[in-house]
Length: 345
Image 1 (spheres, rainbow, N blue to C red):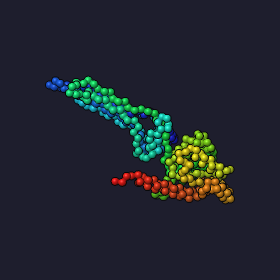
Image 2: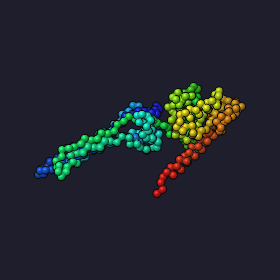
Image 3: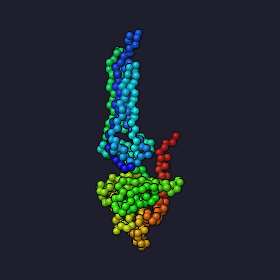
Image 4: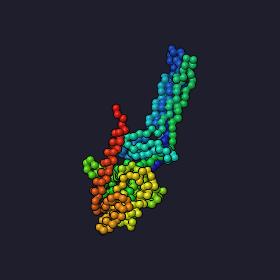
């Protein structure tokens, strides 16, 4: 299935049904009086997050969503039928923006979460509603109220525990394919990964987390260069960033600084997230080269640097265990925060 993380769609809720002018007409009842019913309510437009979707590709082919009009009223004081609600299912992590692409209308980040975007129009009043002691035969009935309509942008931000970042060809896709069942395209040239990839890592029966691999970043990615500007948002929700650095690169420190600069310039709190730095592809280096480059990285970033080879499966389990520790700690902190937000009864 092709990955699509943003789409523009048109939505319109249903108009309300019309009220009617009607009078009771029965044998032996000379002055039956007004009995025109009200119109029914138009259908609503609701967005719902579901957990069996991971792309917005369906909205490339279906871009207009309209709810039906409410039923018209009828004689014998019968109200028109209300129109059915149109429920638009989107992946978890979908944000809904106004047409200006800046005003957020909703963030569906939990399965089952709903957003009522366009409310259906109310039904018009029938003439039975307007009868009074002085106006016993009103001939007034109202049209239904119009529904709401708007263009909106859908933007998907993947829900993952770990964000995989690094320059093109740093070995991110190889790492993802090694530790999970994901099978991204792998080749020895830059920008092999053109779309974000998700992989589930299971360390034990009770321990698992999700990794998001985004296309490689280059200098100027936050300004739209390369592919990074569009996909950096997919790691905003992650608990920790795994920064892979190609150990065979000419200047590993410059590689690290390039990515850190792009994360900082992009904003969204990416630069403040916990970061695990890993020197990758150590199977292609001599022991003294590994130590030299690791020491240079640690001096530049001020933290411990791990060494790994996804191809040779060297130290992969150690990296995964450290990631799991971060994820477990983050989940525990979130659970405590949610518990504290629940008012005491």
